[in-house]
Amino acid sequence: MQYAESNSDLTDDVEDLTFFTPEDFADEEEMIAKTTEQFLKLDVRPLMEKVAPIEQQAVRMLFEKAGEIGLLGIEVPEDFGGLQLGKTVAGLVAEKMGAAGSFSVSFNIHAGVGTLPYVYFGTKAQKEKYLPKLLSGEWIGAYALTEPNAGSDALNAQTTAVLSEDGTYWTLNGEKQWITNAQLANCYVVFGKTARGMTAFIVDRNFEGVSVGPEEKKMGIKDSSTATLILEDVKIPTGNVLGDIGKGHQVALNILNMARLKLAFANIGTGKHALQLALAYAKERKQFQKSLIDFTMIQEKIANMAVQLFGAESAAYRTAGELDDAVQHLASTEEFVRIVADFMTDCAINKVNCSEALDYIVDEAVQIHGGYGYMQEYEVENLYRDARINRIFEGTNEINRLAIAKGVLKKGQGVSRIEDADYPTCLERSYNYIVAAQQQIAVVLKALTLQLKESIGEQQEYLRLLANMNKRLFVLESVFKRTEKAINKQGEASEKLKRLLTEILCEEGYRSIEADAITFVSSAYTDENSRRKIVSEIEAIPVPLYSNLFEKKREIVQAMIKSGRYTV
Figure (spheres, rainbow, N blue to C red):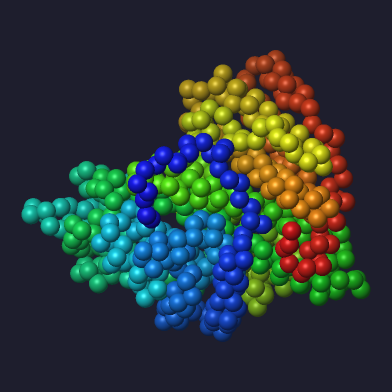
């Protein structure tokens, strides 16, 4: 990352950031997307179909090819051979790579947490030494934070780092568990406890005392390397401290924030691939003398999958665009830490939303395949197993929900960023649902302040509901702004599909928010009269008359059937 001489152009207000949508990609970025698709088609998928598990040497060749065509350097500064294209393009590549099965995991770990710590926290010497090798694919990177007793409580590491008496090297001892790319990696970003606090270190594979345990036997993502990194009296030169001594938590938490967003994009790509497989099978499979796709219950499943994807990609690209705007004029590493910390809630929302949307989509894809979906010769069976880890990766969804809720409580208001706007008339119903949802959350925050303020930190069920409501609101606002922008640019007739998807998301999303709000306040108020009054207040919030969602979903699915894939 190249820092500007001053930060005078920086904005503290997220509301002022540009709202990015997938439709904003230019020809150059679309070419990168096509390059990624060709890489999958010609190099990755043939290997996936022929060899199981994929051998390490074959994976290394894939990394070298990915480096050769520039996919590993999307976020790396040009001064070190990268493309320096930002979070939206990195998200686009991660999305396309989502159809690459286990290699998607290896790729995103390498290009994300295996590389970005050097970009944002490395010294010039560290960048010059490691980044060219990492972005070329000559070296593979890994990120070692988790330990046997430090999973969700990641900063409770037991790995120790002791400075030598002459101050020239550190001695590391400990074990890091479930490390992706462990067997393949040439270098690791490792976190250890020092006398001054958690510190990040660069550990080369060839350092004496570094060893790797056997491959873990996993439920899914079987072709990605997952093993224990063992550190026994490993001597680390002082020049290999990454960032500041005692501030390793800044490296860990801020890189994890961005990793959560990258994971969200990968989930979107996997979800689109699962939808495409389900569509193809439903067209081909016949029962009762009809193709499955001709049955309206199957059509409803396909439409619901598309609705989930539209919400997921709208929110993820919105966040990536806002991040790009926020970090483009950074003055220092400290500025980066502050800015990325401000996006903690948004990144957590996308991680939870996209991983759970993917779980829903692959589950329905298996269901559409019926018994064949349970058989290993059909790809959806593998997608189903692979998808499960995403709710655990990069902080469990429970931990991320707590992060969302705490972010909301810190600001003292919901995630809402939409105020009165000059929106197209056709979006009025959707807008009114969003306004009503904002009011629901305001009622909940009031109840929290009056009834639970002192004890809320220990009552995680309430935090879960608060997180869910704000997650949904963030998605509703994202699809609304995306569709508003598209209609203003292309006209209502050209963007009818987006409008239908937005209407469904806003109506169904509002119903979910209302249900969570009622559950929240009904539990928070112990006095029956107070409870009746607050529930009545919620139910009195005006909303548009509910519509025929079946009809809208039937129209949506026809577009998917025609294209044979997810399309908006």
